[in-house]
Length: 418
Ligand SMILES: *Cc1c(COP(=O)(O)O)cnc(C)c1O
Image 1 (cartoon, rainbow, N blue to C red):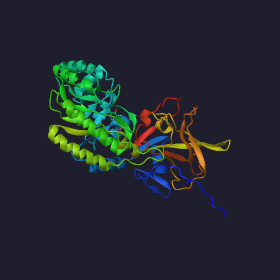
Image 2 (cartoon, helix red, strand yellow):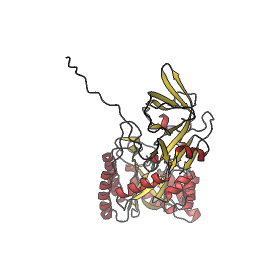
Image 3 (spheres, protein in one colour):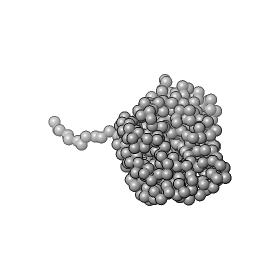
Image 4 (spheres, rainbow, N blue to C red):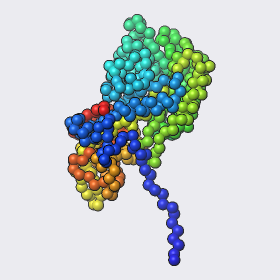
């Protein structure tokens, strides 16, 4: 008898379970409707579908994990579909916008202008004037913004409400996209803020607080807690030189969702505990202030799917290629071309065969003449037929609006809220 010694085989990394959508008789159910019926109702593929029930559940989950005193804002950059923004406006405490275009959608959606805040590194004078007229809060990102705000305020006879977006002297560790710390185009360096606060006072702008946004797509609760503690402490330090009591401290967000094999869900419990401590400290140290979180991806990302049909299925030198009508032009992020360093697969499924066992590996591509147009690379997939529905999960954020739809002039995509 031979005793064979083998290194323990590590199982391949799996995607986090896509349990948010029910599956009935093998078919995905979205917004209470089986996928094939939904596709018939939409009348075309490809499309994005966002599930109202999941959006509501996500906000409720967050509310129960976070202290009641913390305000929750939706950063609509993640998904500016007007019907979705309108729906979110009814669930959250405010909307964060990044352009005059987004301002219009937020206002059309019925958001109270007092609860809209405007961030972005290159605000045009005309946009700043619109912001003053609307009565929203502008997160100042540069000393240059003071003058047009003061001019608009005088002209319109309305206060220009401002907070200072601070580029902190620390980074959000483990973040997919760093947006604070070091040299950055976003915000005002922490060390330059005291002088800016004096200029704000001299220009007669209405100072209301601070905004700190350290980064995006973070799955490590401890790193988020650390960034929130440091952001809060920085706001307290800077408040000493503020021309008016601090009414709002926007601690940013950065909450991530699991996209790739091996990633797991963010644990909200330690974040809630940490924020409870900060709320208590704020009651003593910044008694007029409300703490705010602004989240995009975490609120909407998991509630959305992208659906497209199979056009062709072929073998090349032994490898299986499934060619669909959807791809990079509608869903840049899923093809790995929206800021990812290494291309990894989004979770993908066959909408009507969710429980079918895989029949080997396949690469799922779009119709574009570029090797960048890949929805999935070498994934286990059941046998597919032409016309079958392919579903890309985790598609509710940075999907349609973050994709180059005109590239190759294929048919456009539609978005529905169900
Ligand atoms: C992009 C952005 C957000 C949203 O980030 P998510 O990672 O989607 O939560 C929030 N605030 C600001 C200032 C942003 O630029």
